[in-house]
Image (cartoon, helix red, strand yellow):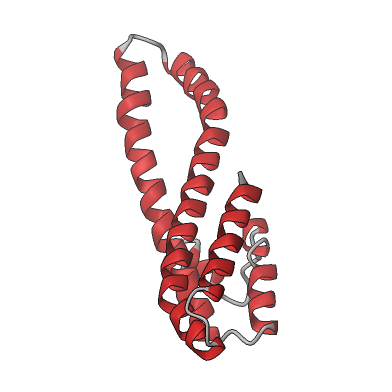
Length: 149
């Protein structure tokens, strides 16, 4: 599952595990230990892989058109282009990673809020109070947002 999420074919018995693949294992282990079904974990990995593939393909196309082609068009030599793009890449990479993670957290908040809106009335009815549970869940979501900021 993990290798496929990274965009590669299913590994064979002779294939080595890549260090980035190992970083996914603790999340899978926790989910399994908490009773998540393997099909749900597999779906999560496939969606993560597909979404990140789309991000990296878009990023690569933009890098080619906006950086590489612009540097070449400026008359730089191949060595100068490689040095200039490496410099820009080292400055841009942490900012893009930060932007991706911030966007992910924003999407989480949105999805979780929607989930709470759909779930809270059911909980409220069982507790006999139409607003107590919703208020508590909303407050927890806001506190989590502040903690991440």
